[in-house]
Image 1 (cartoon, rainbow, N blue to C red):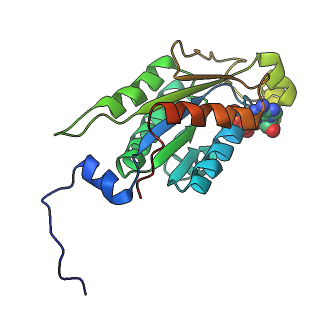
Image 2 (cartoon, rainbow, N blue to C red):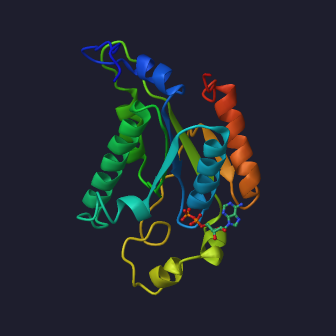
Length: 207
Ligand code: ADP
C-alpha cells in the first residue's frame, strides 16, 4: 500500500494537467447536418488517441439517448441540449481530456454560451481553451449527401424545424478553424486541425 500520499485540499487544473501529462480543452464542431462534423471528429479523435492523448467525442448517439433523452427539438430544448453538452465538455476538459463535440449547434447565442462557460475561471485556474471548428459546405451538397435521409424527410415536411430547411443555421463569424468539407478531404481536415492545435501549443504530451 502506498504510504507516501500527500493530500491537497483541492487540486488545481495545472496540477491535474501535470499528473495527466496533457492539457484538457474543447474542440467544438458546428455545421449543417451532413456537413461532415462526425466524420471529421471521429477521425480526429482516433488520430489524437494514436498520438497518446486522452480524447473523447460527444455526439448525438451518446448524448441524445442518455443525458439528454428528455429533450426534444423545440428551440427551448435545443438551447438546453447545447447548454448541457457544453457543461459536460467543460468537465471533460477540466479533467485533462480533449473533449470533441459534434452537434449542429445552429444558434450563435448557444455557441457563445458554450464558449463563455469555458472562459469562466475560478481560483488560479487559467480559462479552458474552446476551439470552434465550422464545417461548411453549400446546402445543396449536404442535401445531396444526405447519409441518413433526413433532408428528404425534412423536404417532405416530416421533420419540423430542420436546420437549413425550416430552421436557420447561424454561421459562426469568427471560428478558430474553418473547413469547407466539399473542398477538403477528411484527412486534410484532420491535418489542418492538428496543425492549428500544434501552433497553439496544445499538443504537448509531457513525458
Ligand atoms: P454530420 O455529423 O455533420 O451530420 P456526417 O459526418 O454524419 O455529418 O456525414 C457526412 C457525410 O459526408 C458522410 O457520409 C461522409 O462520408 C461524407 N463526406 C464526403 N466527403 C467528406 C469530407 N470531405 N469531410 C467530411 N465528410 C465527408
